[in-house]
Length: 93
Image (tube, rainbow, N blue to C red; front, side, top):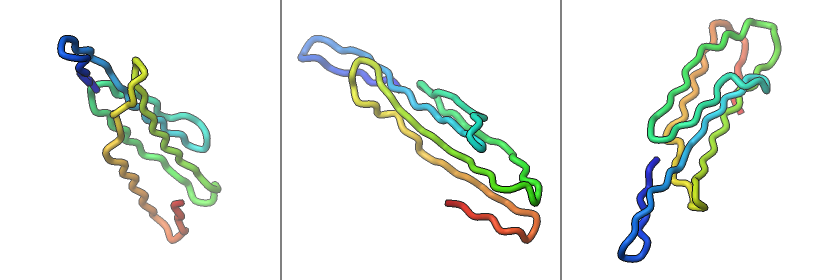
């Protein structure tokens, strides 16, 4: 994201903040992208065969800014859709 900042009555400095999304499946990184002035979307299908134990998905979002300014980049929506084919239970925590 671009953020023009005014210094006094004469000068303007353009600074940039970034937002990163990292997705991990059972601890292994499966997605890692940084958005500067754009929107990023992660979409994936993960098959969970019956009887193969637990699966953990971790979504990590971070933002930072150059030149010691507080970042204003953020994630606006996080949608996770889980579907099951059998009667086995699914828990989300």
